[in-house]
Image 1 (spheres, rainbow, N blue to C red):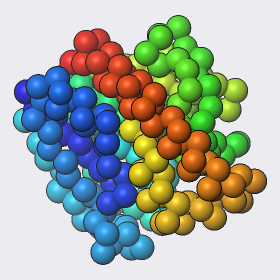
Image 2 (image 1 turned 90 degrees about the horizontal axis):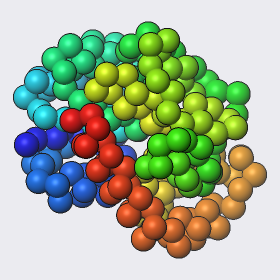
Image 3 (image 1 turned 90 degrees about the vertical axis):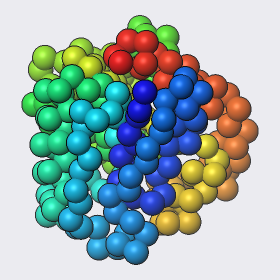
Image 4 (image 1 turned 45 degrees about the horizontal axis):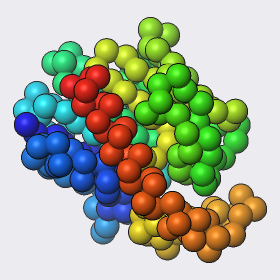
Length: 230
């Protein structure tokens, strides 16, 4: 069994999500769309792998908007087409944050700058136990699920998860650990956290304190995806 992780930038590793796929017997392949040297000029050309060569695909987050064709259009529209191909081929796709947003765009929903920035730990409400609870957020945009999708999770700020056929879209970040957050803070996230009225050092300490719990919950979420969508 093979799972492909599509990482849109060098600082969004799949962490415990990939770890759990490997523990479940999957061969993990990671590809990066915008490499470190192109981070500040992200409108690169990218050749997407053939989706049907994988048993599952995980589409990770990104610091750019899944609506921003002007800034990243060289690969954003091709990614929409690629996800349509994956859906037509029946390949299960798990979308995380940007990944969830582009799934919404791909399948007839929408994504746009949200009315409220969400940064930090928040409670997600869902009748699906594996999706409910405390998850890490770091996004400025939000999605409207496709009309034929099933909304699975919400919080007071935005839709948080939907399912459509073999696609599961998440707004939150199950993959985040303290190491991930530290990298984001160094890359400019510290200013965004401060702009949101928060203390980056406290947020990092909070995340570190939750690492053991959040990794275990990420594993449970991966199990849910494998058992219900793959």
